[in-house]
Length: 267
Image (cartoon, rainbow, N blue to C red; front, side, top):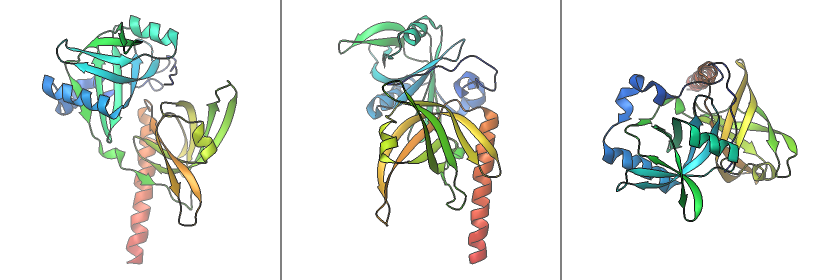
């Protein structure tokens, strides 16, 4: 799995996760051990990618849940590839974890990690959380972007040999949770699941330039009626600041309103 750093900065650059404001989302909190275990095991079964944020900074690593043990009251997380980030994770007093399963956001806090082994490999171990946030939000409605006014995407991608590539693509769709890219097979090959793309630039017509960090979540091949082939690369926003989320929502609302107005005029 790939991981990256988000350097400490202003609050706009380092937004707080919903689980850090649990009192504002009390209706979505799970406190029952049985419910918590069921949700965590769904992350294991789906092999869901999990973003693990370390405080007091905002460094994070991409991981996954490997095991949920009710007898010991512990869970096991995948080990990261970056030794420095792993060391920071072991020293962190709190780790905030966020994942997306079937368009439902799952977040929880762990009170420290310790090193263990899973199937002979290094891993993290932690006590099961006492609460889990399970949040399904309306803004995750997926909007297909207009063909007449395409949204362009530009990002810098690191190749395996360390060199970089300026990649360009068009957005197929956008939601409050992320975007779908229309990528060539060669570009998609450079974007394995878990890859984090920093400072991606997307120009939303009549809204402005959206800059966001994205994590690649899924890919699938598409063949058009005309026989053209491309790969849809689904990407999730990583800790998108509130002001930028508002920009996304304004764009979605306006495009959907214009689309409904056209359909009404054609009726």
